Length: 68
Image 1 (tube, helix red, strand yellow):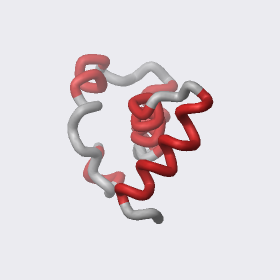
Image 2: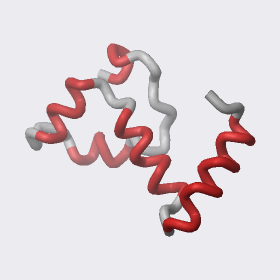
Image 3: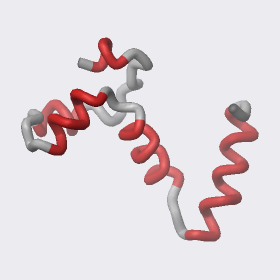
Image 4: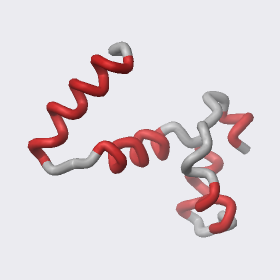
């Protein structure tokens, strides 16, 4: 894994010419780290929308158990 400043530069150089914003990539990467149970609940429409909308700005726990 690249250190944060280098990783940010690499991402910016790769994505800006394609018109992909840093915030979009951040949202996609966060979604990729969600616990499988949460992903299944989202896809099945079984999540509390207020809860899901309030979470995006908070740090995401690395442990899937802590996410639930």
